[in-house]
Length: 462
Image (cartoon, rainbow, N blue to C red; front, side, top):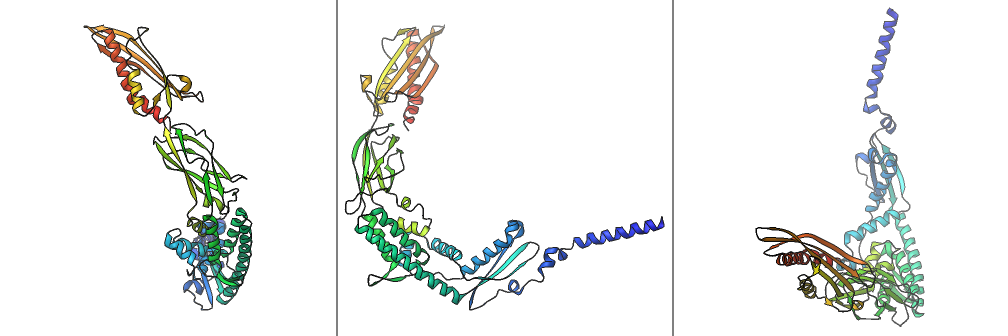
């Protein structure tokens, strides 16, 4: 028994020793594997011949991706040391005009620099219990040589597309010319901060300026012509007349597949926001509803410059496109209210009233809002049906009470659909006779119709 007690005591001491060693952070597997902290983490390294980058990433935050994230951060740190100077007229103009901010351009340039890095080498990595660290360097001379080679490749490719764009313009091929100009711009985007020169047809030119000038000339030469510049439309209804815009180039050729933006610059309505021209250069416009009560409204149709480069994700190129005033035209809309045929019935005790109480007041309110009544339902845009019935209530001390029930319905005669319906019930009227009480209840109902229901009818136009 004594031997067993001694053995148990020894095992307990061993377990306690093991547990104690496990709580010592200095002996965790990560730290034991890492070794001492390297000098490049203790003091920032400096080398005149290299761009240097150091990055770190939390294991808690990035998990198994921490090592890769640390390397990405190190490359971003390295790229941030590559100076980006703005010497291009295009970039300077964009910044001055507010089309692109300096910070946006520098952020884009540095992002492209990270994606475009070549020749960098991983010097060292290190980790502790919570972080991964990475250290990269890039030879400045090697980087300059690589960039020189890439500049020449970009100049060659851009020059080739510039020649194709000019040839397409000579043949009145707008779509091909535009696409070639964009393709000429793309290789130059990483170097727009520089005024790169090229020899084109025996002349030394700044290539980005030449491509930009050709783009501006091509877009400013677009002519848009609507088939109608002025027409009368009805509030709350679609434009039934065929509306189209013809897009032509500066030599009169129809432009095919040109994206157009359609918007109200005065007034409001529901319109197809963008359209493309067909093989004849026509863009068909669809306005399904006029929702603003303004009598004079303006529909603007312009070249959708962002739609032209929807597949190119470059804020710089988007800024260049937005700096070119888009060609536009407009259609003036003279808005009139729908015509109304009113059908009404006002009863008391099942008999028609000799003097109508509600119809005249409701008609006057519609007329005051600019609506017109017609005598023939076939000529009307709307058919408004008003049904009012007053019934006897009680008599008390010589005072008589009646109650009015009213319904109002509005039908669009062109579509046959009911666009509005509402009702009032048990609207009370009290007077010295049932007849006077009935008139009072109907007049009170008319007040409620004018204040509550008719504004909802007008809102239903929107």
